[in-house]
Image (cartoon, rainbow, N blue to C red; front, side):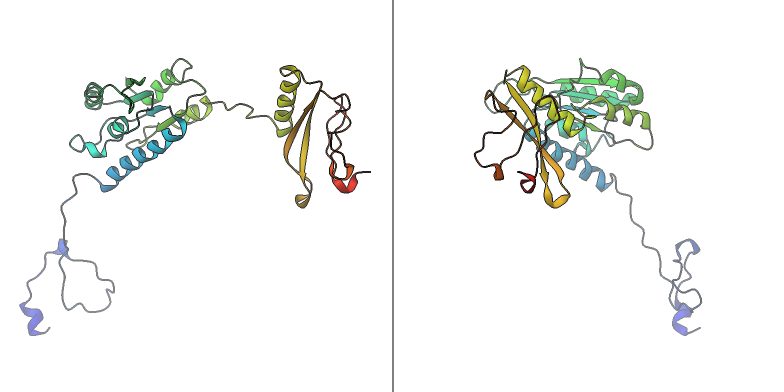
Amino acid sequence: MTTYEQKLPKPTPSLITEPLFPDLPVSVQKRVRRYKRVREPIWTENKARFIEHYLRFFVQITKHGAYIDGFAGPQYSEKPDAWAAALVLASEPKWLRHFFLCELTKRGVAALRELKKSQPEPRDKKGRKLPRTIDILKGDFNVNIEKILRPDKIAQEEATFCLLDQRTFECHWATVRSLAAYKKPPNKDKSAWEIAEIVRKRFEDELRYKSCAACPIFDRNKGNKVMYYMIHASDYDEAPRTNGTSTPESSSRIAPRSTAPVIRKPAEMN
């Protein structure tokens, strides 16, 4: 051992760093640098800001909407900038109409009630009053979700954003499935042909056209894959046999209404 090493103070065992190469001799023992724990995780504030910015663009498209927060209480009462529910309520424009804020803890529910009381009456840029409701639901979100997913609370046509910012593993998978299954997009389980037939029938029944046909448009470069359907509607008596174009080389034959309409490729035309 050198004279320099003999003069070094003996380090505390708990502060010794594990050497990268334990087989090699260590001449100088370094102390571990310790830092104080941050009061709030940096990512919590970033996450809340991200949600706020996302919903700002969300309402620019929808012009309305509902907001569900399954775990809406503040994680850090002294840090309002990291509270997603507060940021969303304060965001502009105030086009979100219905808020459903769920919380299990008494402290979180009390904070949500104070937040609701502090909200000014929502108005647009012209000073007109905007409709808005704020419902605070105390208890288990997995149970309360049944009180939210109802036609008198959220209509099928209402755009809805749901935040599931659980603390650990409080949200049940069955709850996520219930959220996903609530909204039923029209024609979700129908084929493209069935949707085209629905539209064709409406032209015929509601608009009273004599002849209506749903014509598939093919992409010859992709194996005659159907790209979309064209609805041909006409009061012309000859419409079931032709679409009205003068040159058969550039036209498509429309089958009679009693059979499935077919569009032939130009090379197959007579």
